[in-house]
Length: 308
Image (cartoon, rainbow, N blue to C red; front, side, top):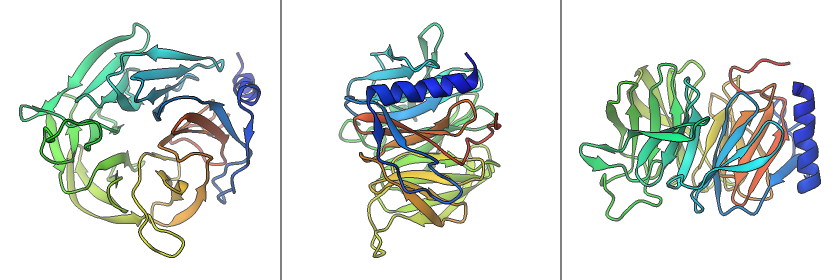
């Protein structure tokens, strides 16, 4: 199916299934460039959208222990109902779907055979708390967060942390002084690691000295009300090809430039949990928001994508 036709079909299907949502205010130079669409709804709690570059979007429904697949023709199906409460998802260079499983491990799925292998299940002989979100670097190393949500009590690791899983399987603890580190992202040049806690309002960034090794952190952006009062933390995040970060907060999708300046907020009918870019030209922004999956066309574009 031609790429243009695929995109039209997805949006036509979304319109027929759930209809348009009122248009969001456009963030200058970012978007959205049209209406926000509710593609599917009636989930328990959606998270972890991951685009495979082939027209398919995968996302988690955490309480139902499912990973769903929205395929290139707009069909929704259950990829697995044994996700071990997967949260964040991302494809690696081998085309495997890497999942942060909140039951205590990172795993990789072969999406063709639906076979799963464990990548890491603990640090210093103890299981992870409940891996939440991840970002994979160019060497195949995985930075991931391990807060307390759905974790046993007392916490197996004793604190909430950020880790690096090297391609050779070595696990290194990088950060242990944030309250519920959640979203995580690398800058386009991979010289900066951003960490977004949900337990505090100030987001952090760290210089990457080399893969899996970071310097001391510094404040990057603080979530505040219009009056300047601190207003909770962040959940998920994605990045565009200009290095702008898209943070899911209680206010919606907050777009922040690399200097830590708020460019604007895209409001949704439900509080978003996570976001990612997809679509044939990398200009479709997908948002998992509580019970629904949303999509919107953007002026901005996925990191590394080329316009068609």
